[in-house]
Image (cartoon, rainbow, N blue to C red; front, top):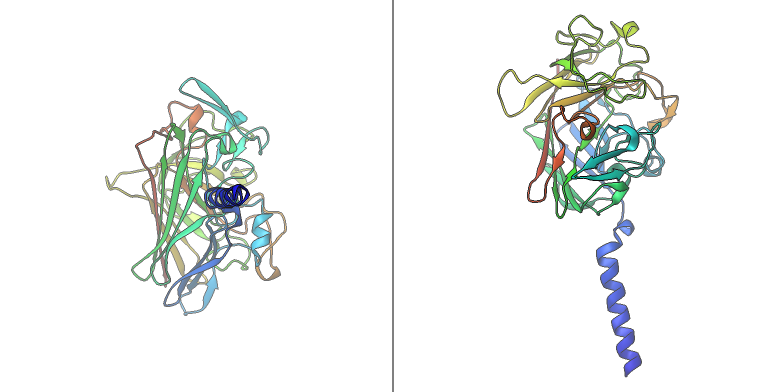
Length: 355
C-alpha cells in the first residue's frame, strides 16, 4: 500500500511539473489569418510572421516578407526573419545594465554587446496560442522567467496579430512584470519588400520617415547618447525619396533609430510610408512608441530563403518600432523600465494599398 501511495504521488508530481514547466514540448504550428486576398501566416515558434500575401495594382498576389520554407530553418536563423523580439529588442551596450543598485549581466551575442534579447530571446522560444479566429486575430503568450537571458523578474508577455477592416494589420504587444522591475522593449522584425520577397533589392523603393532626429551610434551600433537632427544628412527622409538615392553617404547601409515626431498630438505616431512603383503597393505604419529602427538588411549575405531564392544585401527593409536602443544605459533616453503592477503596451498598425 505504501509503495502504491508513493507511486501515485510520484506520478502526480511529475505531471504537475510537466504542466507548469515543460512548455518546450508544445507543438509548433502555423496559423493563417485571411481576409479576401490579404493573408498573413504566423507560427508560434518565436511568434514569427512567415508570410504576408498582398495583391498588386493588377490583382497579382505576392508574398512581401522574406523568410524560409521550413520552420527548422527559423530555429537556426541569425537574421531574425519575422520574429517577435524581446525581452529587450535592439542593442544593450557592454551586455550589462544597472537597475535599482544591482548590475545585471547579459549574454554578449553581438561584438561584446547584447542584441535582440540575448542568445535565446523571445524569437527563439515556443509561444502558447490563446485565441485564434482565421478572419480576425491570433493571440499568443509567453511566460519569461526571472533570470532568463540575465533579465530580472518574471514577465508575462502577450502579442495579438489582428485584422482591422480589409487592408490593415495591427500588432498589439503587452507585458506585465510580476515581482521585479525590468526593462521591456518588444519589437516585430519583419523584412519587407513590397515588390515581392524574390524581386531583388529595395533601393529603388520610395520611403518617407516621420522622424526629424536620430540617435547616432558608434562602430558597434551602440548609441553615444546624443540626439541629432537629420536635416542636411543622408538620413533625411522627411520628404519621400528612394532608399538608394543617398546610400553613398551611409557606409554599409541604413541601421539607425529615428526619433519619431508627434506633431499631430495623437495617440499613435505616423512612422513611415513605403511605396514600390512597379507593383503600386504602398505600406503605411503607425505606432505608440517613440522610435523606429530603419534597417536595409545590410548583413544579409546570400541567405537561402523561400522557394530557394537567395537573399542578398539590401533585399528588404525593416521598420522596427521601439524604445531607443541601449536606453537602460542612457538616462536621457525614454525609460524602458516597467515596474510590477504596470503594463507595457506596444501598438503597430500597418495599412496596405495598391494603385
